[in-house]
Length: 481
Image (cartoon, rainbow, N blue to C red; front, side):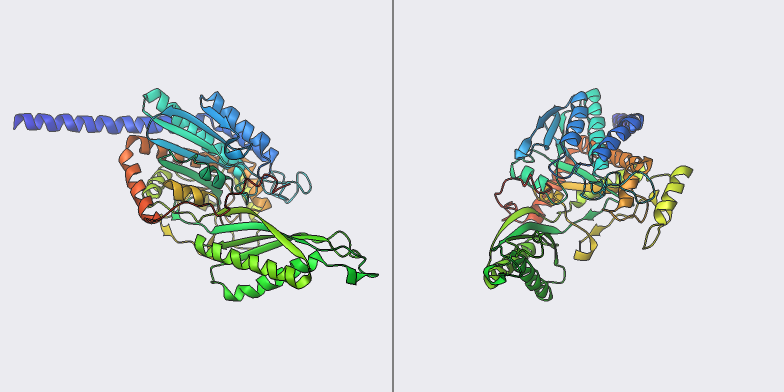
């Protein structure tokens, strides 16, 4: 009995010591990130100023790579036939944890870092989705994890995936297709938002492409009968697709813009182009609807005496949420907490909110952590992301943090403005800390990774085989040119 009591006492002491060490490690990780906040704020602001669209993020990618190399990571650039993609690696052995980093901007959203709408450069791109913060915050988290791995002598590998062209270019899809995630045990990511949450949520599958009609030019007044209008082909296609909307599932979304409609009204257009997106919560529905859109294009060409070809420029799966990892991410988000505004930031935020058409949530909501829940995406409730393809290949979890003023929609000038000042930086560091602590927990408890892998296998189904929605095409490196 005496030996049993002594043994229990030893085990109790060991448990207390382990818990104390874990707390100390976690505190060191957070403290290290706090210490480097100004450094990462500067990096994020530089990328904000570069504002490079998809596959053109040369300076943004190079800056993140430079920071990772300086921290001791081995960086492999130009992966998956994408010049601005990279994989940065530190450590060895299992488990292998991947962190996603994005850094592409959106066309036409140039904005100064002020609460009034004003382009920095007329017509230029801007970070309306906060990817300047996304990429920088992910690098910050990875460096903090690397420092802990090194100082503690813990076995394991941390990888940062520099993933270009999330906005319609499907950069991660090519990286998944190239097998770059094959040895990874778990993937963590985040995204800028106007609130803090870490739900097990999905996204819309999406397939996109450009339909190019070819006709015959002619004088529109003197000899219209000798011409065949490529623009007529585009408009006929659009009319048929619009009639098709009544006969697709209610969760389907179809969007298009005419990117080329001709050169002058008095010339029958010999060339015209229309750019289409098809979305749905399930990728199989996207495949079927896309084929119907293709048939509409072929019918339009036949009816207008033109010809048509098309190029698939993007295609992404819906996110397959992993509840095991999402719950762990949520626990860490609640421990890190939300964003506190200074009086100066409150004044900025109030001016931003004065431009809103819709509701204006309380600024204090930036401090709050939204309750955890499992969400099934509906067509009216979200967008698409190439994180989806990663999530079907590796157990994946993400979070959103308040980098935008509460109530700010993504892809807006207000989002660009917030992402260029301290409000954006504060939300970015919440994400960095949460991801770093979640990675720490996975290294300390590999059993969680095994459980997450079992969940993924069950959701994939027995016969699942990954096939990219965009097929075997090479990366559409010119889709933003």
